[in-house]
Picture (cartoon, helix red, strand yellow):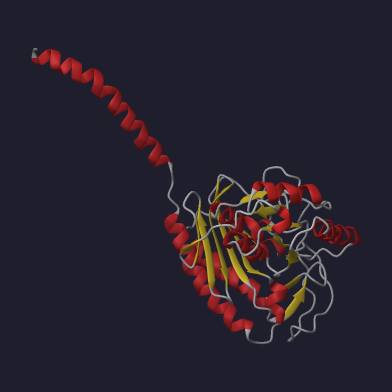
Length: 335
């Protein structure tokens, strides 16, 4: 066989291989790795925890927003400023959705740009009363999809994290849900939340009654949506449901549950939407579906609805004690 014939044969087989490898390289180059961002998020969450731990032990200035259960402290605002300023310094082109920023009047807009979704203190009422479940929640979304989530339960010193497609962890130990399929053998978690109007209260208490009638083993409330959902990822509870929370409460923990092998859906049984303010996180789809069949939702505006946060929160009064909170405010509702 001549040299020319060998070259011709090689070209026939080599060209598809070259094309295939080129395609793989092109696809790989388009798959962004956000590990560096996640590690930086963990780093600054650890720094913010120190601020929260110090403030947790002392008396606090407490302010009201939309209801007697809708609290904010100077520490909430300070921690959010600290987190956002640190991220901006390292990633100046990234965008942010922060709970206290929205309360102060910033528009809540989730775009395709890399966006950090931050709750500086999830469980402010717990923080005020020194009830030991207080969390920093940080989610990172690109093209409206959460790429990683960090939930730091500060008093417990439990750092939950997950990166899309890479599993979920607590203090670097892999997590897995219980996998429970039978609703009658489940321990559930929920919250009453900050909604205090008659319809919301009636719906929430009715939902608890409906679930207890199934029956389930029990229902618990920890006081922070982020930690509630992370308990599902550990197998410590089998399902969490709630209506009326916000994207910053659940964006990070929803990914953590999913990466631990759980399911996250809307309370109506449809696909989960972090802006819809409704969620079921469960050990299995059968449990999630059974809860969605049992509970009802009260109306609440989407987080990304321009009408949802129409005005700057009016912080009216502060005190030096977690046990003496004065009246009123406007703005959005929070957990």
